[in-house]
Amino acid sequence: MNIIINGETRAVTEDTVTVIDLLKKYQLEDARIAVEQNGNILMKEEWDETLLGEQDKIEIVHFVGGG
Image (cartoon, rainbow, N blue to C red):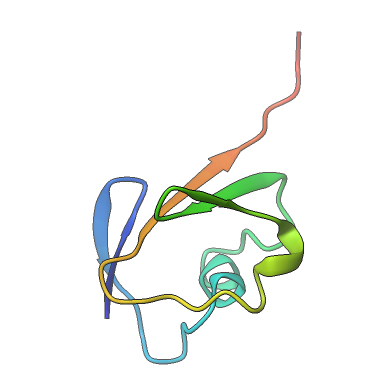
């Protein structure tokens, strides 16, 4: 399946079914991030139940501290 992550098309394997699976693949599940799927911001509690679909547009944004 192909999805678009931060503007780049990427192929994901059959075991990448949910948003949390995707984040684990990139070792981001514990990072301070925000995730948007097809224009909808997802709450962290939704990551494990939100299914990925062909050509989904996923935006992953890192929070950076500082002043």
